[in-house]
Amino acid sequence: MKRNILFITVALVLMVFVQPAFAKIVGVIMTADIDYYRNIHKAFTDDMGKDVEIVLQKPTPDPMSWTNAVRKLTGIGASVIVCYGAPATLTAMKETSDIPIIFAGVYDPDSMNISGKNAAGVASTVPIDKIIKSLNEIKKISKMGVIFSKSEKDTIIQVRDIKKNEGPMGFQSVLISVSDKVNKDEIKGVDALLVTTCAAGMSNIKDIIEAARRDKIPTATLIGGGEDGGILLTIMADPKEQGSAAAEMVKKVLAGAKPAELKVKQPNIIKTIVNMKEAKALGLVVPSGVSGSADKVIQ
Image (cartoon, rainbow, N blue to C red; front, top):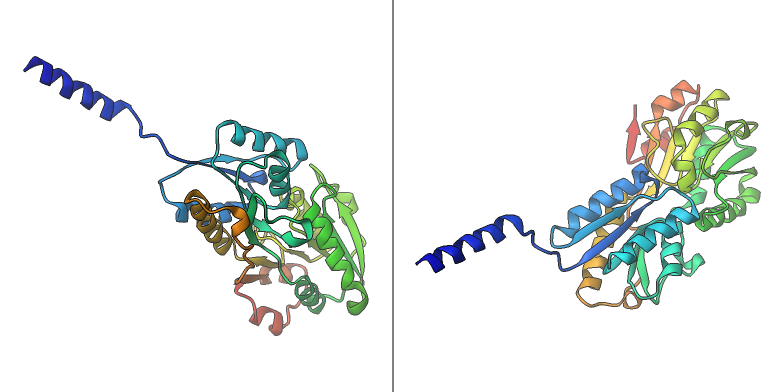
């Protein structure tokens, strides 16, 4: 009788104090904790459920921080590494060839050879010509400032795509490279400002908007997160679709699929946000064709 009581007591203690071990660890790299990546991550975690342990890293937007984040996740034995944005993805691919990598929020992954081998994911490519055309309808552009980062390869590709539109649309690009901080004095002498998917730029978006407002320069982005703060125009791949699609791929990999077997998913949903309140503050009129086609209008 005493032996049975002891056995039951030990079992109860184990049930209370011993936490169930997760079979799989999914590491996630979310650069700079910017809003767009945060929204992707919410959709990702909502769809993943509670059967895996998700370990989140939030490196600052610089090569060493991305490298350290990947090494931490490999060190804890992550079964899959999920990366939001091209810089984290490229770093993960460089640091490990053994752990499957699933990415989201990556502009034109084909141009950077981000696919096959141990990586697959969701592209976030948006029509750059559309955002430039819409900006030009709001305010005639002869010079357009472009915020990018020399250490973020995807933003360099976006600069290339922007320059392809210079001749047909009749404007000149003024390139403004940022790193950890934004030099506000460089944001001047342009008719409009386009912020690429630059993580360094988006982590300093308040300073960018403040500098642009000084000279009544309208701002636009290819990545969500600055609309309520004063970005006038946003065209982005829907973050909810990005996160959900990434979760679907992770589930397939955890079930035994190889990333090389999964095709890179192109975005089906492109969202446009127009900030009419900001346009009014800048003394600009947004044509009905631009506001009428928007998915969200901030009044």
